[in-house]
Length: 109
Image 1: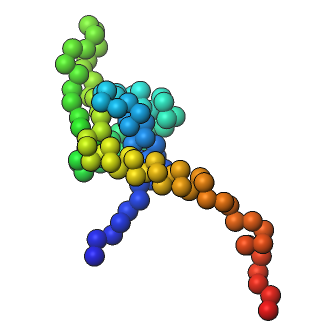
Image 2: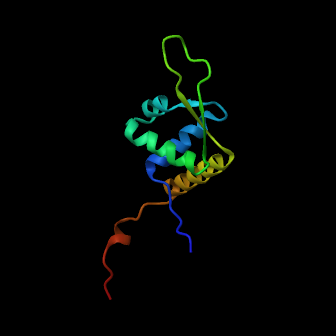
Image 3: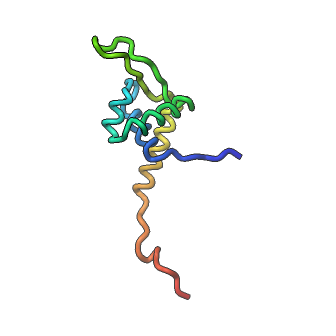
């Protein structure tokens, strides 16, 4: 039986950020700045998502003079579906009431 793995909060944040970009391409550096995550966190996530078919990658075709081409990222169709699922799960978790003191108190017979 296949194990279902839920994305980490960092992976979910990357998916949601890419989903907000829609069809536009994003740079990894911009994602790092937007999300407040380090490159050592974001780039491995992008690589894994690309390997799993959730993210499309491309090289910048016309970089500004004096700067090397950068790698670009955007969600694939499967990635967009995963991002919708992750966002819906996050909304459901946020809407669920937190357990109150009565739910955490030990039962007495």
